[in-house]
Picture 1 (tube, rainbow, N blue to C red):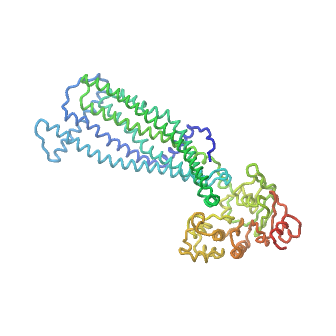
Picture 2 (picture 1 turned 30 degrees about the horizontal axis):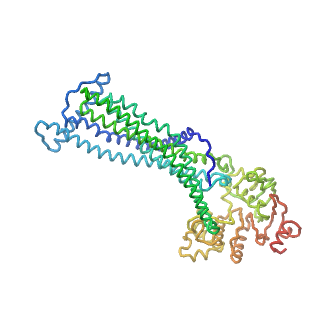
Picture 3 (picture 1 turned 180 degrees about the vertical axis):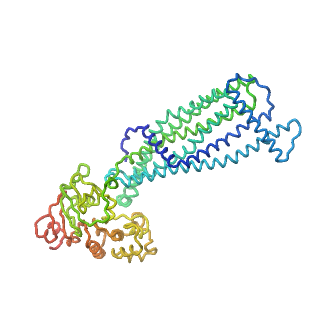
Length: 634
């Protein structure tokens, strides 16, 4: 099982889309973002504060000798005032702490001990307040990142539910599941990492820049070019990371689809001894995923290695300059200490930013797949100038309807009119178009030609939600949700009471069985109704249709899974349900539709006969031949 060849992807367009979503999320959550940025700024201040104390601490521990000043610049006067002001503030605070604690220091080192004490207290306070703001910044930023992903996941799910049925016929379920789980999880990791580093690390680098600017501006000659030198490899290799991550995710989708096929068709797999074959496909998909992920990791690893090379080059240049300046007695020990701190921590901040960038480029592959879904045109059945129906009477007609799946024609000029309250049976061999007619009437598909009319309105002009509130369907293979039996019935009509549900279940001849279960109506139906027999599932589906009280009812082999005794009981319940309602019934067992008001006989997409059972049995057409084969009397 292999994925389709990857289509050329406009990386810049995908990146713009991703950034656009983030910007929109920022606008929608501006107070949350402002709080996170504010906390990050405070985190930066209290994280860098201990570096500022190094000069005071080292100068207190190592008496400074007179240094030969470097050539002065006009800004040096302002910077000197800031530096002196900061050092004086530290000294004043140190004296206050000493006096507040009632301490006295004697001897020549008394002032130095006071400075050390003040620096220790300031470092401890920085740690306490820094920890508080680290907590606040992380919680706020990660909550924002998670909210962006949750909103996107909701948007994708909402869009999928609004797509026409034909879209799902073209897709593999594993790919769709992967888009809602694996791909959004990739984006979640990406956004979380970006939230952790996109704000705080640039602020940290800016803080380092300010420290060097104030205490030793010449160091900026190395600091400023070092940052882009470290970041450049990441920018150059980002395209490869994006490309290879997209291929890796495609392989993951193949693996998810292979697993979905194995588990969804587990009975068929075991019955036909396909375990090894399906496992081989699953292993091949995983091997392909592993190989592609390895290539992506190699690109990321090269970028991280080159970042370190850039840092070491910059650090070597800084060591050369520091050695030169110190030999010339131009850098006091306290100043040296305060230079080393910013230079050494800048590498960590740049590395984190580059890692966040790499992760963003990796997530573009996931974003490509999600955007492909969101670009699909929605079903235009709601909103705009659509007619909203408060009530449906049940007059149904088709005029000149033609429909084809891709290039395969299914319906070729269908015409009929059905007055309200009529029971219509659709009869014909497999592939004649019976189910397609029902799908068109439910508006799961739209005709390529012709018109479907409901109460005189073209179905294309109706608000599909308001129309579907008045219809119900029971299909040959009913689907039950993995929730309680009560909820499976009640979902037929939101707001249905317990009494409504039980009345529907009684009419569908399933109440006694439900009542006999240990949990009664609270019994979990299981995945796709796995805790129930086929006949029980069918009757619960019928009860779901009954509780809806529809104006138009569609029954597609609704009694096919029932034994003879249950079929007779449910058929009577269905007859009661169909009374005074427009009903369309598909049944291969013609005995179940002989009392229909109108029988439409289809062959190769055309209506070849129409009439009641008695009228059609008097002819020599297809219906009579089918009836004789099924031993249905006249």
